[in-house]
Structures are given as C-alpha cells and as structure tokens.
Image (cartoon, rainbow over all chains, first blue to last red; front, side, top):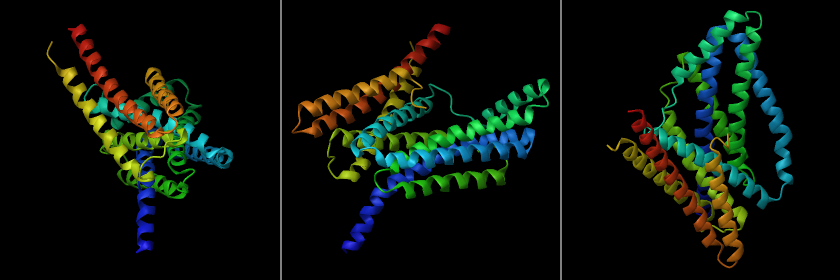
Length: 255
Length: 64
C-alpha cells in the first residue's frame, strides 16, 4: 500500500506539469506549423525544412547552455522569478482567451494566418525573386525559434527544481510530434484545433503554477503542497469564465 | 511574450509586491499573504476582462 500511495502522489505531482507542457506545446506547435506549411506550399519544402532545422538547432543550443545554469540559482530565487514570469504568461493567456470567449476580440484563425503569410511571401516574390528562398527560410526560422522558446520556458518553468523536467519535456515532445504527424497527413492548417479552448486551459494551469511558485518563493507553505495546484486551477478557471460572462454581457448591453 | 499588455503586467507586479510586503510584515502567518496573492490575481483577471468588454461596447457606440 505505501508503494501505491507513493506512485499516486508522484502522479498527482507530475500530471499537472505534463498536462501543462503538453497543452501549451500543442498550441505553440500549431502556430509554428501554420507558418511552416505556408512557406512549404508556396516556396517548397527545402527552405521550410532548413528554417525549421536551424530554429530547432539554435533552440537546443540555448537550452543546453542556459539549462545547467539554473542549478546554480538558489531555489527560492528561482521559484520567485519563474513564478512571477509564469503569472505574467499564464494570466496574459487567460485574459486573452476569456476576451475571445466573450467575443470582445476575434478568435485566432489559422486559415487566415496561413493565407496572410502566403500573401506576404507572394508580394515579396514579385520584387525579389532571387532572395525569396532565403526570406522564406528566415520566416520559418523565426517562427520555430519564437514558438520553441515559449515551449522551452514552459517546460523549464513547470518542471525545474522539482525533478519533473523529463516528464514535462516528454509532454512537450509528444504534443509537437502529434502536430507534425496530423499536419503532414492533412496537409493544411490545423484550423479545427480548439485553439482558444486550449489557450484557456493552458492559461489556467500556468496561472496556477505561477501563483504556487511565487508563493513558495515568498516563503508561503501552501496547505497540501503540490496538491494546492488543483484548487488554484479551479479558482482561475472560475475567474476566467466569470470575466468572460461579465465582458459578454457588458459588450452586448443595449445603451 | 510577457509584456504584451504593460499595465496588466505592472498590476501583477503590484499584487506580488503587496503579498511580499504582507508576508514580511506578518512573519508568523505567511499564508495570509499567500491568500492576498491568490485573491489579487483572481480579481485582476476578472476586472481586466470585464473592463475590456465595457470599453469594446463604448467603442462600438462611438462608431454608431
């Protein structure tokens, strides 16, 4: 029985980290994939592949160099800094997702982004034929690097200092692989992914992690320790839904 | 990535600062400061989203 309880407690600690890393990586991977697909279909897969590999290589280098430095930072400082950054990231996503759910701002439209990216590359093609492959590759490089940095930050933030880097990394890798496989089979923007729902959920989880770590960094001993993440997530979910309901009513009210 | 809305980010920092000050002042009961941190972040989200809805409605009324 003690062994079973230890396994349950390990899963209750690891599950939120894996889920947060998986869901956030799914969103970021879809956004990066849209750009890669736009470039690939317009300019060919060679510049798309080169840009992707270059972005991933630089990302791996940054993680390899900066990752070990985290071990040198005192744990309380690390908790506080990462906690505050997670709060800004998570609350920002939650706020935007709530505004989209309320209809105050438009939903993220992968089809429209795909079309806009192709149009932008097409316009440049009329002016600079010779440099276009380089431009296309750089477009993909920037997208993969930026979205990848966000994934790397989330993996480190939810996993570092708690021995959960590997599970969080596997969650992120799993999400990226799913997007690549599904996207390659469908060969069009993954517009059917419920992106705002995912962002809402990720915003809730990252906000819960953010408040948990910020509190620990400030010296708060949360009741139930890691299990406090679950009520925090429920509270942020409620706050997001309440905010969306109030905003929907406020924006629709007849003067 | 983090500072898409500067005022929102600043408000988060103020909530964290307030919680830190309370924890430092009430050394024996840090959980109270933790509660302020949680409540402050929840109120921030609700207020900011609600206000954005009202601003959006005002913007549409001005266009009419």
